[in-house]
Image (tube, helix red, strand yellow):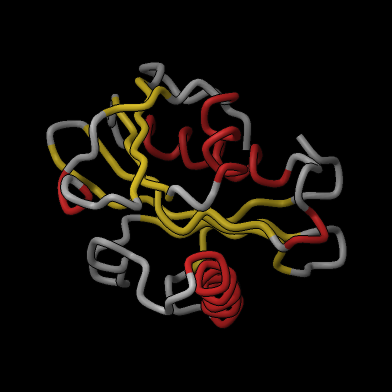
Length: 161
């Protein structure tokens, strides 16, 4: 874990959450060449179970991630993002660990996620952290740009937040 990092739950519409999601969408627009590269419904306050924000020691929002319930003990990781200047410093791992702990606290036993073909850095990150590639699921089933993963969770939270 990064020593100067604090991960906290915030409302989906918190200004820092909105700013990070906007930055993520801008980056994806550049990578995919279109502002509408998301194959499924975008997360909303109504369907987001929790939205986590990572802050540095100065209180700046530097990363985020969310969970969406899928039912039957499963959830989906959404909106994982770290500002470029803090990538490869452990921020994404801290956010993912906090999301996994939150999912385990809710009794979920499986997390799924979708990333895209133009995000090899994200694919490598999830694979390094125990996620295995699966056939595209749900809204992503027919998307040629989607790459999907899942990971079974421990029954108890790891306490890594």
